[in-house]
Length: 188
Image: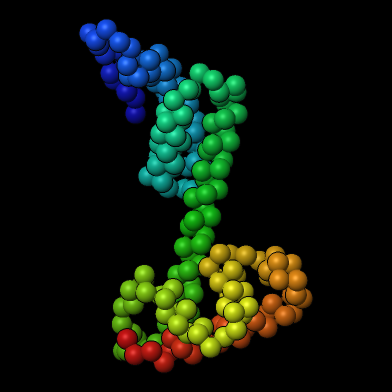
């Protein structure tokens, strides 16, 4: 995809507007876009294996680049774009992983027979989980959320709370059992 209108727009006003100052940057931006878009797309596509998502990631990078409003001051453009695509792909994968984990817990909590199964509003699950944890201690609640929804590892949680990993496992097991029982007993 390329921009077809790269010619400057004439402005007959006597003062220089922000738009006029950006005309040289627009040309530079179009040149950068045409030169690097395909390469960035290939990098993203190799990682996410989805054409539309890869295109979206690359478009977001160029949108952010344009928003910087001073493209010419980037010292090493290739390094900048390389880092940008790397971090954009990592963010996408991290988001997908968190979403996948959430859906797995959603399925685990809803062990209901197929005849009784009803649709649970996706947005209600965190509130229901919080209600299910109502009788747990604050520490156990926080450990559960850090592990299951913020994707913290047990070792990190243990260090944060200054507890042993065994203690963290105890809190996670206790909270998971409590929440599962609560969700099983809810009549949808």
